[in-house]
Length: 342
Image 1 (tube, rainbow, N blue to C red):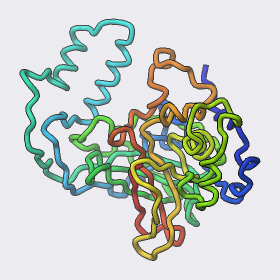
Image 2: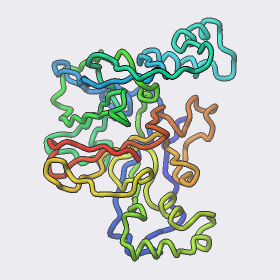
Image 3: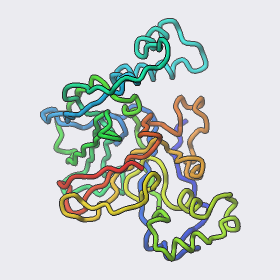
Image 4: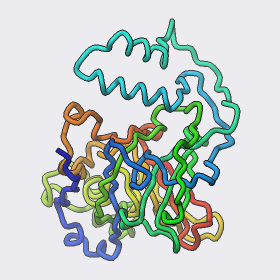
């Protein structure tokens, strides 16, 4: 039985404790991707795009470096590998399955050898990452005359994460759809092939990370007696950031989470306007142990019950399980977007 994911209510109304946060509230749309069979007419992660048949498919000219350790597999081989992994749950591999997996990823002979990174020559087709219809995603602020956002990326690091491209279009203008888009012959990592996922969008309310607040409010949160307010064994700043501030996982809009770096200005490279959060491409829907309270109702707790890891339904991983955040200029959709890894 399919159950629509719903975010549990926050254990505390944080604006009742800190009224100064109320005017800083923003809505975000959690996408709740779950593996399935989306169509070009659906909002999806990793699904087929409503792409005009007469419009060139995006390609990336590189550079594309293979590290010499991880095999650069094709999307077809990664899909086959995943299909076998799902099919053999609870049983041993068949001889045919074992032969296929050893062809895709040959067993290493002898000790691991490090070799110099080498470039992968040629322009390669980009992969669909997200397709979002404005009708489905309340926080998708589509430019005038458009109602559809399409995000693609190159499945190689540039230099520390995949390079993304954005396309805004009107769905009604696409009458002849490209049914067999090109695919790259190889990918730097398996994790850069998103599993096709329909979405169950849900709007939630978020607040800034404590590091984006005024010094006075940061001090108040730091002195907060969390142990009296909630049954949590956390530092007050950690409790605020992980439980009350911003939702983990794939989402549109809202407030960003911070980790590897502290918050900083995000000016538009063209006009200098402060850029808006567009899309968070997440390695995990769970957000780590401290953020488990965001895990939605309606999700079976175990991988065995549903055939996929509920923490990583899209199979995407950025670096060491980071997020890739996309920001756009509020002044013009023609201005280049920026990317951050957090």
